[in-house]
Image (cartoon, rainbow, N blue to C red; front, side, top):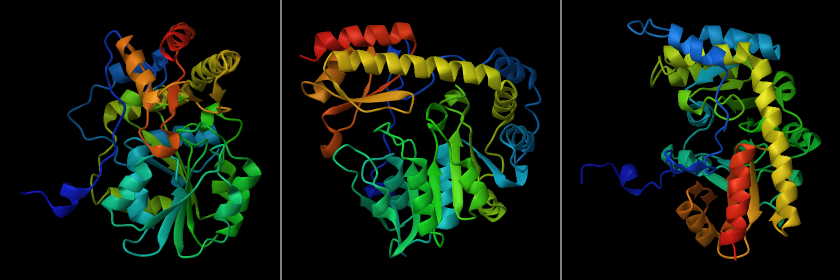
Length: 349
């Protein structure tokens, strides 16, 4: 065997199926709506592919800075928020040292990165309703960092803003990463906390609200020292991780934010309608603040997911004891969700 011990033993992250032709994709939390025409035009017009891209994506940083009133020096751009998070593990956490801490039911990439980089970690159990209890994260011992997905995935729940503040105030000697992949669908965001505290990093993606999952672009807000740390680690891997087409498309999306706001509101309206419909049908469903819903099926959730797939509808089932009876269903268009609701009634019995 020519693989390293790490490559032989590590349990890698498993992404949702990417089957497109003829299927309704409700399994990867993508945006069901296309990006704005301005994005497509910008990509088409960016033809200088014989030259390397701007290594720091300065134009995109400036556009984001203008939109969010943030100094571009406090912004980092990565090849998807997954790259940003993966680099953050190396930049801020020491291997074989104190633990990093995150919820036991959250984004399943967190423990993968910890294993990959030999970073000790421990999880804190969510409560019986899948909520993260802020009091469990106060004044943590033997801890070098905390990661909170807010709103959380796959549960779809949003913590109270005051609870996020409480955790930060009690752990100012630790790096706190707030993964805001779905914050655009929630009731607030934590950008102000990254401006107030120098140990807070906010990580976001262009894949959800911005409808650019195929371009692979993510970004982070934080103190200039945190951003410099991310840049140093990135430049040890790949100085040109954001290609020209991605930078052009993402910049165009930021500059056409009104379009993004419109599709966000469409998704939220559809989400609330789907939640109401599922509750009327007797389903136990959480109060989603994301672009997906998390529901408990009547029969085996794994069976329901397979039966839906046979009807050309993809949803996500996690074969994890605590959530094995639940399905995560992305919010698509109204037409797609009507087909899902009709099919669910047929197969979940």
